[in-house]
Image 1: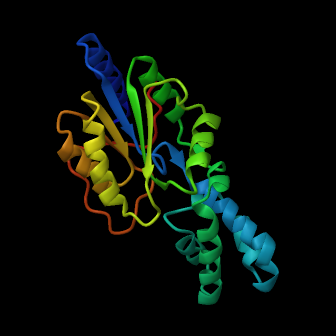
Image 2 (image 1 turned 90 degrees about the vertical axis):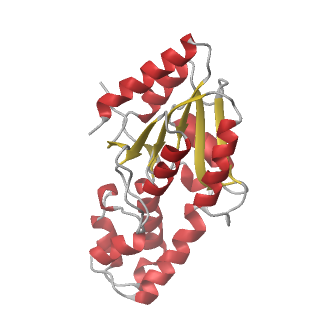
Image 3 (image 1 turned 135 degrees about the horizontal axis):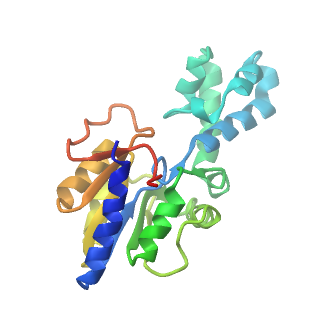
Length: 240
């Protein structure tokens, strides 16, 4: 794995600052800086508490689940534990959808190990932190800021940008493609990008070939393209 290359990011920040350039580090949020597993699990637990009496055995299944059992979506998580009733799965999906993309439930997320400390180290050395997320304006901005601060990420200190989707409906790929133009507008040196989605990481690698591009081996969407060979794979941000 490439955890040792996180030190290289810090060195590149120092070099950019010494040369009078603004170093920029781009961070995705969900499944990159934050794990959403606690959010998914808490929503499942809330559903089981409120409606479990209508579905025999559901409460027992949910009680056995931990954050380690949470994958890309809760429906497949439940299927792996033997839940097959489609009516139940549809109802759980609707319950989840009403909550997952809201300010309140964002506060359940936990940081990926080492993420706040690494972001602080980058910022302390002079980097601009560009938080780029598929979370949307009009329902997730307040919770996102509170979650960043609650988990110890730099925010109210200058040199921090939070870029959310302007609407829920906008596709992630199109949004992040547009964001490349905004990142370039700072006229700085793109030092590194961090993503969990191979498609987005590949896009950053093409857009900023001189930067280091890290792929978090957490979870990603089904059917994601193969990651470019140049990407640096890491499990978390612990770098010694």
